[in-house]
Image (tube, rainbow, N blue to C red; front, side, top):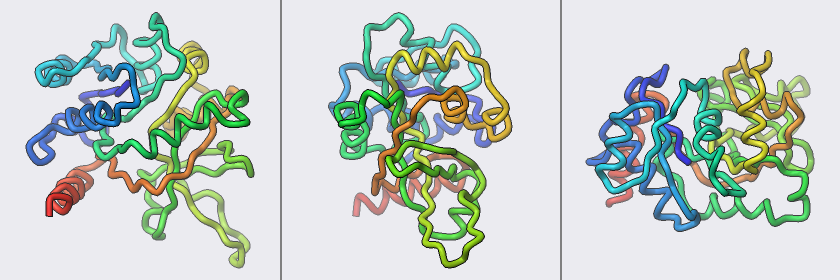
Length: 241
């Protein structure tokens, strides 16, 4: 399921921007389909412009019945009456998703601690201080078993001991949910931490859900700003060379 909101706060209409001949949302949809990991792929949107963009290109799309604060709510409404076990949320502004990282994400539901997992997501290491300080890069810290302890737009952890060896990790907003965990999220109200950071994954932690984090080498380019769009265009140009 690919949640796709047209009126994005930071970059309105970004999903319909041209990305080397194809819109961002269509390129993301095609990338998800091309992995061949899923029985069905849908875009779930609040806007007929995006709905028509996907269906006119032969894809599947669903119009939300209600207004939603976040992508998880939008997806939960769409799958509530579907017969599914695992629901994968691919953000509409992630056109560079690829098969290997999604396979690793899904594999945790067959691992030794699968019974403890309510949902799983991806993380990748941050290389520069600029990336660590950037509030658009959501950071995540985990316990020794790779379950998330906290997500923040701020650099976490704060390094008081300058001799400590710390790797900072960026959260990549691709999730695999058990359907029940997703529906629980949908029915529970937002709490203080989610409201403060505006990060929906904090709702799961605040209500005691377990989020398994999977490290990936994927250096995705999420389209959050016009500058990100330019980076994505350059990346595609370089891939053609």
